[in-house]
Figure 1 (cartoon, rainbow, N blue to C red):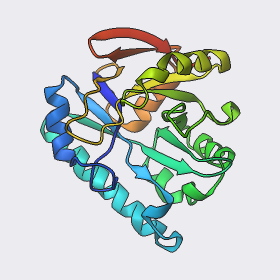
Figure 2: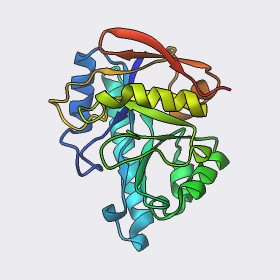
Figure 3: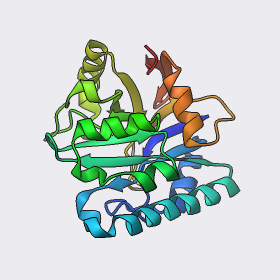
Figure 4: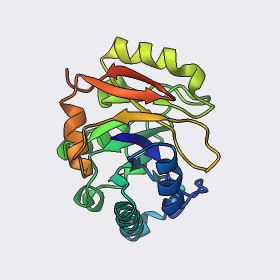
Length: 229
């Protein structure tokens, strides 16, 4: 299966200009079999007292996307991209997300990187810093993350060599994703995973046991550093 590990649907991610129906159509046309729906969790999306209602909306968006994808031979996996501000602004992709994880979570945007990482570990989830060297971003504490992303947006292509160097230096895994927000996105790439992985927990377990990850960027297939030590 070819999957994009980083896509956003407009039903939750306010910056996205594609519905989950459009994601399915466009990704199938581009040769993908699935995608991780990494909709944003950002502090201006909800008031703290409305968190539980917002989480329910988040879950419902995924369920609708999953069911629609299944009807069309495309698999959505549940993920979440959390923006934090402690110690500094950063975005983290979380793999292995479940409804229980979301419903029991603290206000993830308003806790520290360390606290978010420790919460992920309670559920066996993996935490990957998204686009760590994009302008106005920087790599945060490597002790409280599992990997870093090779992001295929135009803002990040030039940083790939440096991101790989950082991953090797600190023993971090490398994921690949397009940060898909619009139909005119030109980046094509992601991970190649075994057939038969059907949900986010199975995907996360596969990633955790992999010393190397098979990735594709455009037409090129390559191996990237995995999560298993």
